[in-house]
Amino acid sequence: MGTSRKSLARDQNRTAYLFLLPWLLGFFLLTAGPMAGSLYLSLTKYTLLSPPTWIGVENYARIFAEDDTFRGSLWLTFKYVFLSVPLKLAFALMIAMVLNKGLRAIGLYRTVYYIPSLLGGSVAIAIVWRQIFDGTGAVNRALAWLGIEGPSWIAHPDYIIHTIVTLSVWQFGSAMVIFLAGLKQIPSDLYEAAQVDGANGWRRFSRITLPMLTPVIFFNLVMGVINSFQAFTPAFVIGDGRGGPLDATMFYTLYLYLKGFSFFEMGYASALAWIMLLIIGLLTAVIFVTSKYWVFYGDNKEGR
Amino acid sequence: MTTATTMKTRLAGPLKHLPVIALGLLMIYPVLWLIASSFKPNQLIFSDPSLWPATFTLDNYKNGWAGFQGISFGRFFANSFVISILSVLGNVITCSLAAFAFARLKFSFGKLWFALMLVTIMLPYHVTLVPQYVIFNELHWINTYYPLVLPKWLATDSFFILLMVQFIRGIPKDLDESATIDGCNYKQIYFRIMLPLLTPALITTAIFTFIWTWDDFFSQMIYLSDIRLFTVQLGIRALFDPSGSSDWGALLAMSALSLLPITAVFLVFQRYFLEGIATTGLK
Image 1 (cartoon, rainbow over the protein chains, first blue to last red):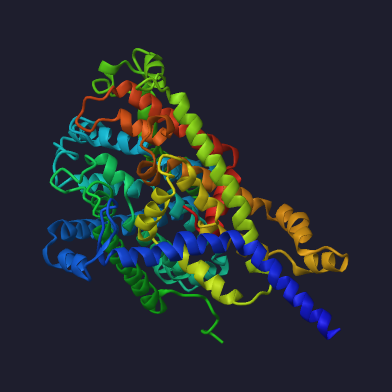
Image 2: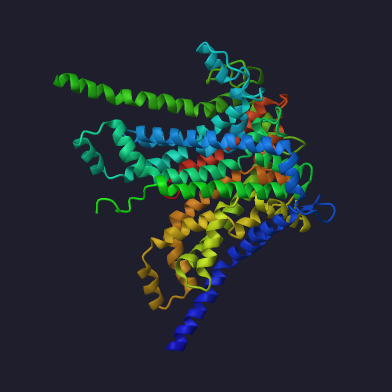
């Protein structure tokens, strides 16, 4: 009996590894291996044509000490992340709350608001965006109609970032769908009790809705920061593909791409990639650590 | 008083819809602009702002479809479909295999592997980019579809593994236990019990893999430079000249066409989409 159970466990072990085989291969050959590889390459000078030569931390030293483009692209990417993620979440929450008020045809509205999230990542929409924000495009026509003279959103280095942020905020639909699902989870007796106690709309929102949604906000925040830090297509297509005008579309990933695949400084690009990994890791860690002060998991600690 | 309140509520119903509809139109405007412009003659695209073409033409579609350098857009569409479908199959098969092992089987270092799988969800693509390129270059796989499709057949989109693990955990264990008593081995449990019950999660995986692969631009641009292998996204980017001398009609027509497959998938599988997003937070 004992031996057969042991052989059963061994059998299960072997079967499990068979099922896991594709993932294990992918993990070692395409994830863990290349990660170690890029850490090594980041300490070398490597152009793909000749074998890498070891230069220690020189790439990192150059990046931090003398690379203005790096600093500019990091600042630009931070600006993009810290503008687009909160705006997108605020919009998503606001519209979700309006739709949650028991409107008829909510399914149709949800679909319409979701469509931008569906299509927004494509090159096609980025091109459309460029056109409707361009000098005499639809946006400036609408502004002119209101008596405002709009700037050249694409050509001017100060404004093009806002064009790209708008494209991201426009895609609030997926976050909205998550918020809608979260709103449905809030027990209605909480609101009824609050109403009996005479709490007004704002207090009901700030004391019930918002705290109950914090796990959803937390999730959206983490995924939003990780994803928008890696944004590439909008900057590449709305800008000129080389970071212009005046490096105003030089997002971090675009700079990494140009360094690695235009100038073939692959060691340098690897160093940029590792710095990016550390920054994203750090940002995520900050959100995780602070989450215990603001994320409410309804774990029944109170009131018992 | 009572009539006043009923009046108020009766009016409030449709009135509440107004801002929602207005914002909805604003949201959908860029898409409508794209569709309308693709039917306008070139010289009217930027001068006529209306959403209904004054002169209606199909020339843009004809010119766009003709492609460039002797290769038609039909080829690009076919290429995109090949890559997307191979990617979907890869993800559905290998992610479900891994998910079954993680969710149901006991094996050595199981917790460690699971934790590593979770970590890979958060990893930015760029940190493996350069060495992956070097490897694929050594294998002479640049200008082939292997670098785009092989990762999906090795379950590197671990996000979908997590999605399926969570789904399998919701399936009662009695089902596989009674199947074991009936003499099923793990292979049979996977094929006869798990896969059929997992269908909703498999469909969610399939549609999101399709859309992300169809829209993928970065890795396609890095690995494909031979025009015969171009995808729809690369074809559109090639038609587009940021300095302004593009054939706008053709470009917008092909752009509109490029959104069609994703929209079709969305409309057919809408239910899975919205459920998939709501329960897992997919984009």
